[in-house]
Amino acid sequence: MPYIGISMINFLLLVLMALTIFGVPLKGSFITLAIGAFLYVISTTGIGLLISAFTRSQVAALTAAAIGTTMPAVQFSGMVTPVSALTGVPAVMGHGFPMTYFLRVSVGTFTKGLGLGDLAGNLGWLCVFVLVLTGLSLVLLRKQEQ
Image (cartoon, rainbow, N blue to C red; front, top):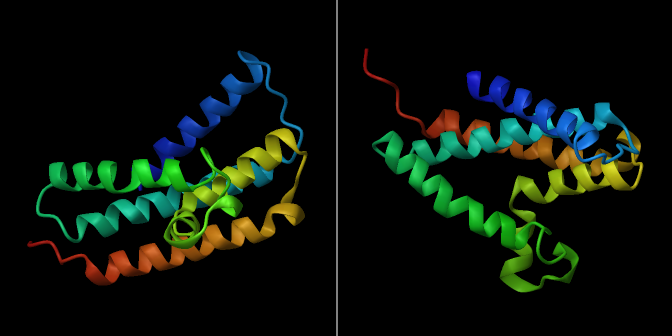
C-alpha cells in the first residue's frame, strides 16, 4: 500500500531531522523504533480503512478519521496525561488507540535507551491492533463494483 510506504519515508525523515537538526540522541534501538513505527502505520491505516467501510465518500472518511481519532488519541494516549493516571472511560479509551503504545516505543527508544525486549509488550499490542483493524476492515468493506 502506498500509504504505508509514504508514512515510513516520513518516519525516516522525522528521525533524521530529530537526530541532525534538533540534536536529539537516539539512546535505544533504532530497529525497535522502526518496527514500532511500521506496526503503528499499518494499524492507523487499518483505522482509516475501517472508517471507510462506514462512509460513502473519501471526504467523509477523511473528516470522520480526523475528528474521531485525532483529539481522543492526543488526549488519552499519554501525550497530555499519562494513561496510568486515567480512570474509567478515559482509561479504556487510552488503551484503545495504537498511539498509546507507539508513544511508549518512541519515548522508550529515544530517551530511555530501551530495546526490543523492553518494549515487546507494546509492540505486541500494536500487532493486535494491526490484526483486529485490518481484519475488521476486510470483513466490513464492500466489494467495489467492476
